[in-house]
Image 1 (cartoon, rainbow, N blue to C red):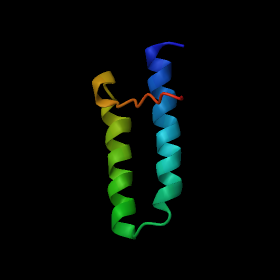
Image 2: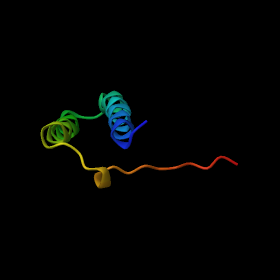
Image 3: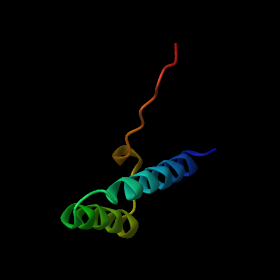
Length: 58
């Protein structure tokens, strides 16, 4: 899988999780999150803007 596909999948998964969690927030916070999503969709995303957390299982 290429880096672009990895990033797109990470963003899709993150957005889905955030949307589900946002249902419990007040309207102001929901609107703020929606605005961030709009910016990502219109401006795109750079690889350096995406934080990946690697977990190490022991």
